[in-house]
Image 1 (cartoon, rainbow, N blue to C red):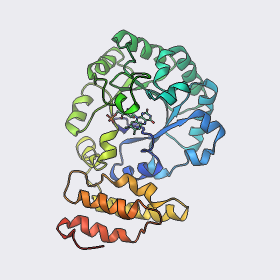
Image 2 (cartoon, helix red, strand yellow; image 1 turned 90 degrees about the vertical axis):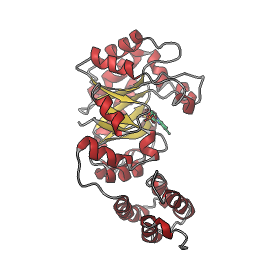
Image 3 (cartoon, rainbow, N blue to C red; image 1 turned 180 degrees about the vertical axis):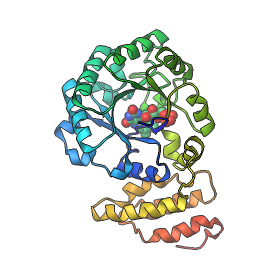
Length: 327
Ligand SMILES: Cc1cc2nc3c(=O)[nH]c(=O)nc-3n(C[C@H](O)[C@H](O)[C@H](O)COP(=O)(O)O)c2cc1C
């Protein structure tokens, strides 16, 4: 599995439509689902929760939970649905998640996590990976994260995705927990030095290809969340500079391809805005971007939005000086 660059699991963001859209820009990055709770897979509509388009591959399924039985069952079902990797979330600090005992609070219970991973590994042939933080609350010394990784690696897990900040359990909102605890990349680099046989993927605050190249000198992979969500065409830079890809779709061609997908999805009952909302940042940082956002929010992100208007808008984004022309 190529884990050089991956796009982070993000609730309400990395759904199947977002992944299809990102895959049009990048053939190489590894994509992750949002966290899906093992209880939901057990009791809920499996098809609705897990089905995805084969063109999104490679895709890793991220699970949340702390029941070895439910997690192993969910991993097995994930394999049947065609995912390429099963990842366990040990990094989410939200209160709701803690109440249900999954996410970052499981860093306090390494033996339970090891039980979960053992069962998951036994139930699937897919690689089982972990996404975690470098510490929690006042537990932030290197020895603690070293012991955590060491114990979990004994289960056979080979890939550790390290969000390079600690989680403050119960104290901060999820948003504060993504920004306030400082990033400590050196701890992740040291883990790679101490566990040279493990694949260590670094995550947190990565926003450009120079940073990616720098991290890749120290660790095996880089995972990026918000910068890709807010500026999806960043993936085109990644394709060019990290994978030396030559034929990358232009933004306009990405939208044209996406419209073909939209037409198929609409027939299945998908709302247009559920797809197009992910494209708000496509023109981030370039001329015409505010026009694209306004157009989307006025036309594409409303009920009964009209797909036919898209060709018109593509012309306008290509020629932003003609923005005043009414649609
Ligand atoms: C809106 C949002 C939702 C997130 N949902 C998840 C999630 O479901 N599972 C998870 O492991 N991390 C989740 N995260 C954390 C990201 O995966 C990532 O670790 C974090 O954003 C740091 O990376 P970044 O600085 O590149 O964004 C979420 C982050 C954001 C912003």
